[in-house]
Image (cartoon, rainbow, N blue to C red):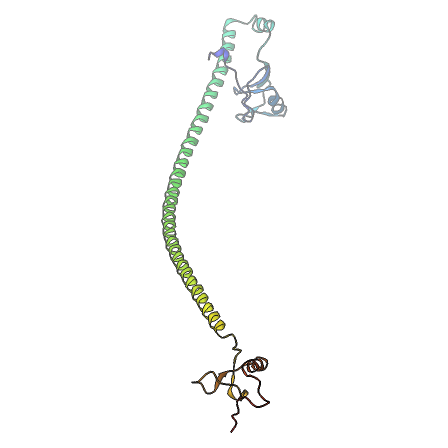
Length: 251
């Protein structure tokens, strides 16, 4: 970029705007925008915001137009001797060179500070990456351990499930045997009940003295017929006689 394309910036540290139109220049070789220059140099005595120099002289602070008109440029140095014109031009060029050098130094300072920040950030990121890698490795080991435990639990679960299935099969087998035995027992009981249609129960021998005994081996227990069935039984098996007892033999 050529010198003619370069634009000075406001030396106020909170502004740094590119200058155009009017600007305030100081004897300590600083330049400010019209807004901040009007505020800062309205006080008495005026103090340079950039270097804190006291600007008490009449010509220590000037408000100048950065792009003057052609008429102004044709008349501002008219009549001055060449050495004066050269001296004015030299001082103007010195001011410009100082501003450019200041901007360069400021840019280098900002670049150096940014480089230092980048180095610190890289160091910080490196430490963070190392810490994250350690945490990641620890998490991987923990995941591996958990997977191993999960496989052990799965194996135990399969073993318990196999045992449970075996117990269920045994239970089903026993349940089938029990039901089969129960059905067999019920069938036997029904057959025994059907084989004695006239049997009503067991009673003591002294409860029915005249009833015949059907159990020869047991003296204290016998099958007895109910009163109505006994009467019917004896009426059916005993033929009518002449009003005599059927079981009493006559002499």
